Image (cartoon, rainbow, N blue to C red; front, side):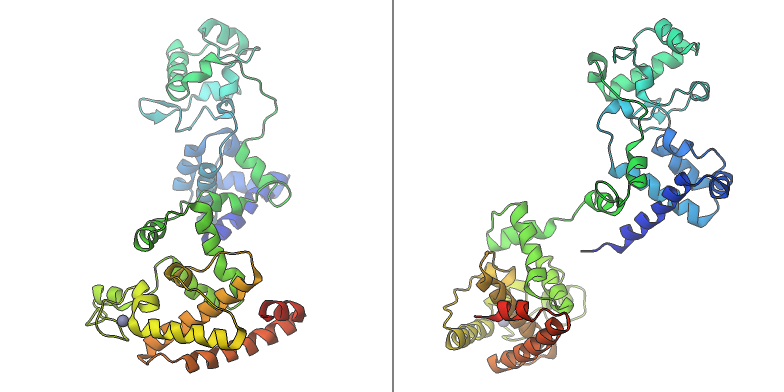
Length: 376
Ligand SMILES: [Zn+2]
């Protein structure tokens, strides 16, 4: 499902790309707004962006920096030696990210600046001072070392190989957006924590033991079965259990009774309204008879096939999923209208659907695909 919020965030980050690639006035304006050199946005860790976003008054650039902060949480460096030393939540002294200005003035910004020529973490204060010709307070040196070791203990026991100059990973993705590798939008989306509660609930209710790949395919079925956005959205709401039933409407005080619209005997849940209800069961029997009379297809329907869709590579299943989806939509519309179910009503709706779909395929010069889909 397309995420407009993160699409806008990705668009805003394209401004960072423009500024980084520009040489003149654009860069100067940005620097005057954020109050520091543009290099700061990739030489400092994400807490720096957060801090800047909180103090900037210009709303547009405030949002750009906030989005850059979120984006930094979405991407990780391959090796911790490329991590920022300053304003980095992974390197804390007294529970706070640190910034030693004198160190930054000496161009010390990354963990790899604390490695010797063999790629090992410099353990001795004297060797560090000799390498950088710089003599900070020894307490700062010890504090920084302890903070790094506290987060990445193994870093001190390894010889690291690294190549310089190194472009921070978030800046690399912004600069190469849509040219190389995953786009900024896709990286945002990849990091989104999906709410999988619906999987747990369906697994319990339908006795399923399927894995993530199976559920991904189930989510794709409505997109493969129909080009009708209304039907796709309808099936999405069923899969994600966000379609309203009397049980839910009663719970939020919008209906007096949680009982089924058709039988008025049992609580109207998603499974009940589309499968368990005795009147709906009669409708599915009529559906199977109609299908057999029309196509000689002997359809075996199970509750999971009806509610979530049927997974199979055959072309046959593709149109059967479409038919079941249209039939479910008919059931739901009759429920909303408070009308009885009737197979003839479904056949009329199917006829209208086929005529509409045929026109769309024709307009898109895809007549063959339409014939292939429905050549039963
Ligand atoms: Zn019922």
